[in-house]
Length: 118
Image (cartoon, rainbow, N blue to C red; front, side, top):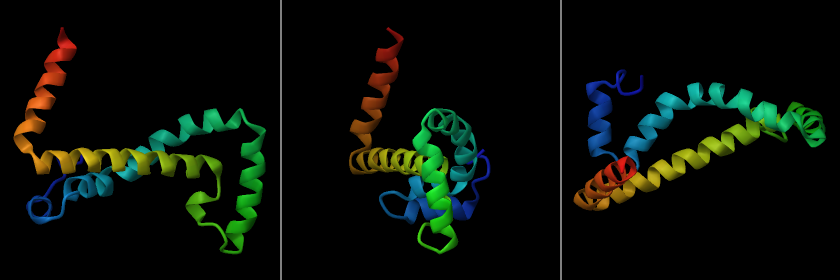
């Protein structure tokens, strides 16, 4: 859906942007949806820990005083956000490699795809 929603202006920003302009485009277009998909999975895992309830209670109080950001006021949202940060960091690193050496990156992708089919 992110690619389908791409405008000509988006494409120009990607082409003229920095080393991670594609990553930033995808982050802007996909982060809310991925957050909603990750949250239930993270919630199931963190619910198994009694620490999650304690963190949520404490962080909720801290958020009321502005000591904790609202998106970090529950362990589920915090872990989800950090997971997505890691995802976009890895995508950005791959984008930088591709931009630095497009021919080698293309060959590596082809090698991985066809190597996986064997």
